Structures are given as C-alpha cells and as structure tokens.
Image (cartoon, rainbow over all chains, first blue to last red; front, side, top):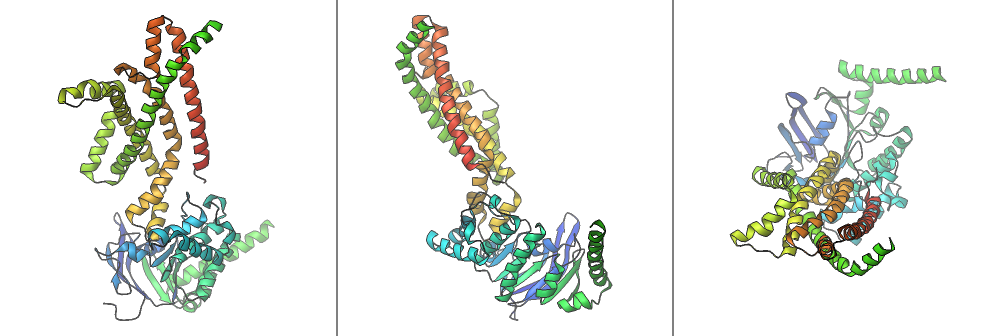
Length: 260
Length: 218
C-alpha cells in the first residue's frame, strides 16, 4: 500500500471525543530522517493527534501507516509497533516506583527480552547520552523536571526506535530545564533521528523542523517549510497566530521592563 | 499486683502456646487473603461482566456478613454437605476468606489511584496490557494501598480471637479455659490483652518500616 519510502503515512485521520471532533481529516507523510513540527493554539488537537500516531488513542477514522504496516488496522500488533516508536510525554510519566536505571531497563527486559546485564549496559549508555550517568539509582521524585524529561527521552531511545514522538516535551518545565531538554533534542536532530514534535517552543521548531504543520480546531490549516510557516505564511490564520506569538513575546519583554 | 505477676507467670506457658495458634491462623489467613485479594481486585477492575460480577458478589457478600457467621457456616454448616474441617483449618479458611474481601477493596482503591499517565507510558514503550498491569500498576497500587493494608493486617491479628468460638486453643481460648479453672477471669484476660498488645506493637513497628521504605516518593 505504501509505495513511497515514507516512514510514516497518515491519511484522513479522525478522532472524536463524544460529539466533538478533535482531529479532523489530518493527512501527512513523514520521510526517514525528517523533523516535523506541529504547532497551533491550545485545544487545536495537537496532543490528541500525536497520541493517535502510536495508538495510545484509538482513532475514529482514517489510517496511520508505519512502513508497510497499518497501525490503525483492527488486527494490528500495537505492542510491537509501539516498541518501534519512542514517545515523550509532556509530564514525563516516569515510573514512580522504579529507579532511573530500572525505568530504562523495564522495556528492554520485558519487551526486547534482553538479559538484565545487557539492559543495564544499554541504560547506562543512554543515560550518559542525556547527561544523567550520575542519577542511575535516583527515584524520579528526586529529580528536577528537566532531569525527569531527559530520563524519559533515554527510556524511549533505549528501545532503539525508528522515530520519536514528542508531545510538548518542555511545556511542564521551568525555563532553566527547558534548555537542557532542547539540547538533548538538538543532539538527536544532529544524529539524524526521525521526529515529530508538538511544541510551543517556536524558536526551536523554526530552527530544527524540516516541515511544520499548523493546526487549528483539529485540522491542518497550513503545511510548509519552517521558513514558509514562520516568515511567509499563506493562510491568514497562520499569520495571525505567528504575529500573536511575536506580539506576546514583545509584551513579555515590555512587562519585564516595566516591572524592573 | 505482685500476686498478678505470679499468676501471669504461672500461666504464661499455656498462653504462649495459644499465641502460636494465634500467629499460625493469622499468617496463613493473611497470605491467602493477600493472594486472593489481588486476584479479586484485578478481576473487579479489569475483567468483563461475568467474572467481574463474581468478584463484586463475593466481596460484597463477605463484607456484608459477620466474620463469626462465616466461621460458623464453614465449621458447623459445611459438614452438613460433607465438607469437614478441623477447628484450626476452619478458622484459617474463615479468616482468610474474610480478609481477602477487605484486602481486595484496598488493592482496588490503589489500582484506581494509579495515574493514567503511568499506564500510557508503559504501553508507549511496548509493554502489553498484562505486563503494564503486572509491572507498573500493581506495584504502585500496593504502595498507595499500603497504609490501609497495614491497618487491615493489624485488625485481622486481633480478629483471630474469634477462633476460640469454634474451640481452637489459641490465645483467647487458652485464657478462657484458665479463667474457667481458676475463676480469675479478670486477671487472665488482662494477661491475654497484654500479649495481644505486644504482638500488635511489634507488627505495627514492622509495618511502619515497610511503609517508610516503600511509600511513593512524589
């Protein structure tokens, strides 16, 4: 079915909660190595959309394909497909009862059937990669938000995913922590990881995304290069959103100037 | 007062022998109740109607009737249909069944309180539904239920005393017998009460340690 070399293909995706359509006829493709940013106002359905992409939310219509396998098929082996897709949550969702090390090894041991020793080697490597080699035996509650989010990225990376989905990875973080998480994500970009990122960090999206989707009310209003979306939007709604953010940032700066 | 100590010391061996029965009933019932409690809680939360109704019916039936009635039915009622237990076994079975229903409810509360994001995170790394329950939901549910569960453990230790009613020679049964022989009911029940108090204090301290060790850190 999937003739092109796209890693993921989404076609006519529909998702409703009760009678409200939250994702409305969304279609796009994702090439290997591509970084796709998804932006839009709160309540646009961005998080619901990205949760449909690994089957965390069942869809009401349309299809999601990973390679040649339809993830939305009734008989899809979702567990096996999810193991190929890394997912990073807004609020981290580290397993609170497990140490950092065991947060990372759980999937390796139970899903990939690795020996405990091999899993720990991988965990140590992945945690070193996100700068947390010294936190192996800490519990999540002992870490800052930024550290927890980096552990959750390491937990996802340890499974050697073919693509990574990020659902507002920095929205729950204080400003200091945002930088540490974005640094790790930049490193992934440099390594050529395929990624879909829902984010309000516009500067980051503009800097790393190959392609940007602008969503309003569950639908894609405009899709284009970062340059197009941020500097030459074709749609009035996109322009209003981008200008609004710019105005808000100027407002922040003015507020800080007044209060200082 | 000095007289009481002499009396207590004279009868201590018999009471301690009874205490061994008390502990045996309690340990067996608690372990059985723990395992059955988890099974019932998981059935009540995760299974589909016929099985779920079975769990709900069992839990509500047991919680809705007195322990003493349950024990009499098991010890004196079941022989009528050909099932005969020794007094000790009947006490273990009755208290085990009784506590399983309560433990199930505490565990169910714990399962319900595990945050949805924890399950989503488990599924997102590729764990199956069953693996997510086993490795993420249940361990966290136990930690959440721990204070109530610890309370239940202590309560059941004291409830073992009803076993004297089917002539198990546990602590309470021994005390009553000594009382009948000496007519010093007040003194002997006081000794029995002190022994229960010591047991409960030891158990409570151990449970406090466990609670502190495993309390969810967030």
